[in-house]
Length: 267
Ligand SMILES: C[S@@+](CC[C@H](N)C(=O)[O-])C[C@H]1O[C@@H](n2cnc3c(N)ncnc32)[C@H](O)[C@@H]1O
Image (cartoon, rainbow, N blue to C red; front, side, top):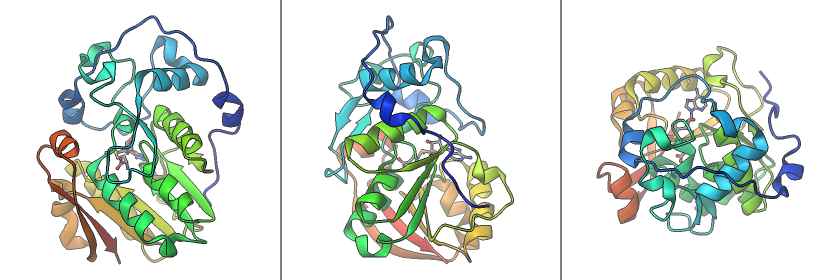
């Protein structure tokens, strides 16, 4: 399989669109979302969020630009304690499982690693799998990767990646289909980035199988704070620890007490 962009061809045009006014106020309970099991289907948006412009306007209205994380040189639109969504009930939230609204501990670590080790990524074709807010993909582009692909099955995450890439003045190709479900190998990527994708045991096994299938073709960098899903499969992986970072108090609170997050290379 040769990865090609399938989303966002007219994003530049959309980026300049005026905000729509949304009638609703959203409340969101962080812990409830973190407990939610990831769906292996596209999240779908409800009612007013059905158009891309409305989705983008909602993301812009309901998130805050945040730099208080392990990579403060990147501006990211996130759900922060200052956002209405932070305290809102899940049923009042217009987004289904907004994982893209958080910068996960594993993603923070691998993104910090990319920025600090730009030479590894410079000139490469890079794929960020499960990109969420897009931070790792943005960092790869900043590091000088020649082509950067951000993949997420959540179409709202894809809009968040697009918005965040504009905020940081980098170009990212966005891929919205479920490449993990395909048995076809991806042939044209030098580097795969996997930020915090082992949060669920079942899903962790699926990622593992996919990575095992890919590892002869691409270097693979995994960011993870030590979640059960990674520990469970780590015996089947040949992992080299590359870096470990202290997390901020805010990130510790969002991640059930994980105080550090690490970067591993799989071989
Ligand atoms: C825990 S978040 C991590 C996001 C980001 N990498 C980070 O570390 O901040 C997991 C992300 O993976 C996405 N995801 C889940 N299943 C996926 C799949 N089969 N293919 C691509 N993305 C997927 C989710 O939509 C979500 O954005």
